[in-house]
Amino acid sequence: MNEDRVLTMAKSALRLANIIRYENGHEIIDVSLLRTVPDGELMKYRNVGKTTIEKIRKIRKSLEWV
Image (cartoon, rainbow, N blue to C red):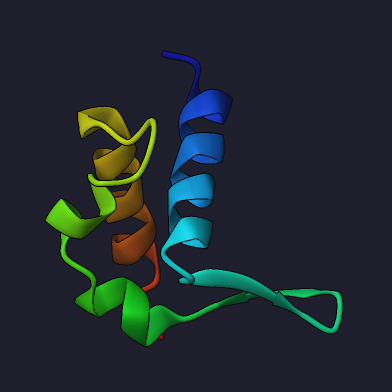
């Protein structure tokens, strides 16, 4: 699957879960919520499958230092 499409679907799922939101024209990522939301809850959203969850896990891992 196209990597850009997977990233777009992952960001869409994170927006639906209110992990990514917009405030004053800025994109805000709630890192604590990203860490605590289980994969099963994200799977409930439209177009979220195994590949999308793997991408979200990569995003989580890349933000571990925060």
